[in-house]
Length: 339
View 1 (cartoon, rainbow, N blue to C red):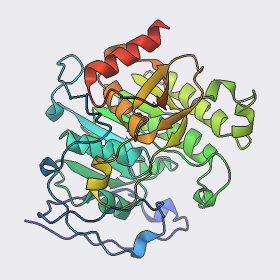
View 2 (cartoon, rainbow, N blue to C red):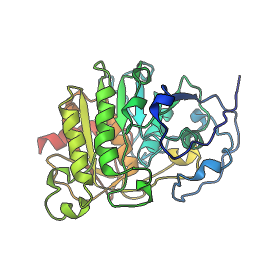
View 3 (cartoon, helix red, strand yellow):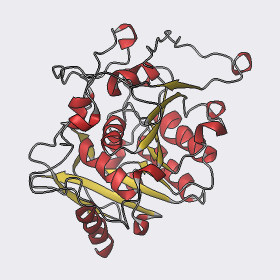
């Protein structure tokens, strides 16, 4: 039976934990009905859309053509060594409504992989992804900056994690509410990693190129407010955690975030002519990376055993790319290790 989910505005001031011993909550996403596709928009995401009316129902995922970073010459293939059954996976995405995170979630949904979103604003997640069956998509309100939010029950059944949390390198409106690099990229990552179960098969962390050179030009300019330093601290904490991990370090992010609040827009996003992918190691790459490509790299790396315990830099360049072909991505990751 379909249900309608109503949200109560959440105040932006801190609430004493002792008054609310269970600060996190699971928000079910119920099934939706068929409706004509809505028009698309590419305006910037605004966190102040609490009062916006709910989006119209979306068409079923299987009615949407998979176009996420899919190049004309790249048809998906299936490799039992790199693509285990989707029914055996439950992927927790931290920061699932952000620029990279929303593309990760859309792609997971399109692959019929069960997902659990860790977000500060469930209303925004529902607006982006529609009302999904809770067996497919679960939305949990929690803030990685607050360790008391990360109750062990959140991670029950989770097999993989993709962490896409982040903020701006320089002071901006996104820093409001203590959303600084130190709180997000260091303390938030530390809190999340500390809460993860030892049974986890893989965590993929989105970091940044330049983290090993934050005291050198030109990276020292980007690091004026500590973003690269704090990302590196988050990386190091993950390395020392004993958990199986892969780190993805994108160049300057391009493409998106997409803000039409329509899953169709996310699934049809393309990287234009810059679909080719460069992957390196040793923090040597300098350039840009499409958010679409970064999201796909995170998903592909989840199941490649040889990427465990390694960090990869990633850029997007003009040309035909790997699309969502696991074999082509495997070749890219392996080539980086051979350099």
